[in-house]
Structure formats: structure tokens, C-alpha cells
Length: 163
Image: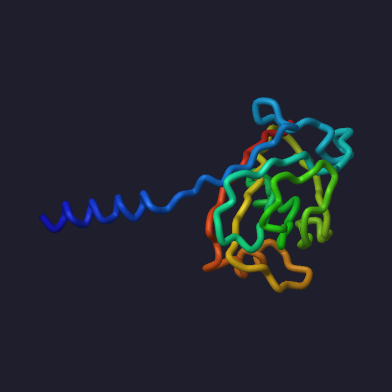
């Protein structure tokens, strides 16, 4: 009987936690990132794609967007870190800066497009809704992730492939 009560309690708790937040891109077809958003090595313009955000939970104070490549030969490569994006942001325009930029794996505070040395890579756009704004100066991804700990209300991701 205790196991059944525990199972029902867990299901009720899980059912009360809603993560309806969604991140999409009208710039992608079949999750393929167009070359326009890639680095110059691929004749890209090195500009961020348009992103659409929906379902941000009540109580959100800011959003964080992390764009990285877990398939990079040297380990996960961070392409774009943006934090303190206003909570009411419904879209991120192409070639824009929606918040404060952190330091990517190139050591720059800007967007760096897909630039795989070989093969097709998966690129993750990870969006987080936070119950706070982050007080950081020139952070890398690890610093942003550490500061988010205990403040994430919801999260979602969009995966794009390139080339």
C-alpha cells in the first residue's frame, strides 16, 4: 500500500510541474541550419538565426540562451552564451543581441556560427527560464551555468544539424 501511495504522490507532483516552454526557429527546415548562419569557412555570414520563444512560465525574471556543439573534436564548443534576456522576449531576431553576451570558446563575447572541421554536427540551442537576473561580468558558459543553479524554472532546447 505504501508503494502505491508513493507512486500516486510522485505522479501528482510530476503532473503539477509543467514545462510548456518551447524554442523554435523559422530559419530551419528539417532541423538543418542554413549556411547563412555558419562561419566564413562555409561561406556563412556568422549571424544568429531567428528564434521564437513561447510558454515562458509565470515568475520568470530572465532567460538564458546557450548555443553549443557537443560533437566538436576537442569537447563541447560554446558558440554563443546570452544571459539576462528579458522574460517577455517572444522572439530573437536574426543578427541581434537579445541580452548580455558571455564568452564563447573562441574567447569572444558574440555569436560564432557553426564551423565543424568535418562531418555533420549537432548544434544545441538551450533556453532556460530563471527566477532571477544574473549578476556576472564577462562569464564563460561554466560561470553562467553555475550562477543558474537553483534558479531554473523551465528549460527547453532546439537541435540543429550542420552541414
